[in-house]
Image (cartoon, rainbow, N blue to C red):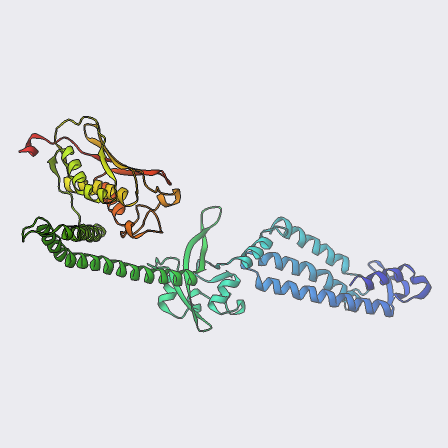
Amino acid sequence: IALLPLITLLLVWTNETHRLIWETLTIAENSDFTGLRITHGLLFRLYWIYAYILLLLGTINLFRSYRNNPAAFRTQNLMLILATLAPWIGNTLYVTRLSPVPELDLSPFGFAISGLLFTLAIFRFQLFDLIPVARSIVMNQMSDGMIVLDNQLRVVDINQVALFLFQITKDDLFGKSIAEIINNDQERMKLLPAHAAPDNLLSFNIADKTHIVELFKTNLQDEQGQQRGHLVMLRDVTAYKESEKQLLEARDKAIEAYEFKSQFLAKVSHELRTPLNIILAYAEMVQDQVFGTITPIQEKPVKNIINNAAVLTRQVNNLLDMAQLENDRIALISTPFFVPDILNDVIQQATPLAEDKGLCIQLDTPTIVANKVQGDAEKITQILFNLVHNGIKFSDTGCITIKAAKLRDDEWMFSVNDQGMGISEERQETIFDPFEQASKSLTNRQRGVGLGLSIVKQFVELMEGRVEVNSQEDVGSTFTIWLPLPPATELELI
């Protein structure tokens, strides 16, 4: 672009030798002034055409910018257009001899007018302000749609995302009200700034695909606090809504499956409990020789029946307790009781299981004052038995030690220690979850469904207590629980 102007400049400096720019230069006397009469050469006319083509292209770009810019920045474009046209018109009149005074070059007057217009644009309309540039960059890089409305709800600005959502162009949009853009009355009302839509969601069908758009609206005010228009933001939340729908469907299915599982466990437990109790009762009656004398050979099979029926009964009871806990059907029954009584009950229930594995159960407690406390004795017994049974299940040698101590008037501590396989640190974080085991590689002697410790934790929390485990692999485990057990009052003892 600069090559031809450079050549022309060199020719101007050497015009005296070739006369290609100005053929003749003479003095023209006028009644009002003395001017210079110039006859332009061929290269001057070629350069003049070239320069005016560039001016024309630049002016066209300014007009395009004027049309595409929002109203707030159009005045700047108008100042640029007028400043460009002033010297262009003056020079055209001079070169074509259409000026009222042919010898008077009007170009300097045009540049003077341009200077005034540029001064006005710079100091009055912030010509070199970066806001228009920043606005264009920010708006075109936004992932959200944006619409600016004036107080008459006419569109004064919009970005590319919003144009895509509405499937329109800027030429179809500027100067139109929002009501003319959206045909659907319900969707149109959501866009109106004064309307508070309950869901603030719009639906757009683009290329046979539905886009869900979330709507945000706010008022625009000037520095004096006067309302100048409204800002509408459109955020495409289609993917989010689809994910939300899938999550809700998955949640509903999970809840349905969870409820079915709880109902199934409760029903199966109820159906199994009665026949198991009958089997256990008859086996104990046979062992007690109620139906006649049994031989020494028969004693061992009968004992195996009793032990296995008792194990299965405990597992069924655990399933029923878990189902009731999950459905909030477990209620605490508070009664006065002696702590030594529940400890003896636990030892009595667990001793046969320990003896079958060659283990011992010992009670390591300081002297306990024989005063009754208030609490759910049955559930505390079940908690301690589950802990002792867990120690028996995962121990091959040694003893299971039970401790109990009164910490304050209304708090007791119980602990169960074993010398079994121990629990790894990572497993300790999940050991109280339902259907979890201390080891994933259980032998037949370590049978169970992994509910005992989960029931322990939930029963303890139901009583507003807490439970902790301290374990080391190949050394053993200690489970400690703290329970609020206030002294029984005289009224409760009656």
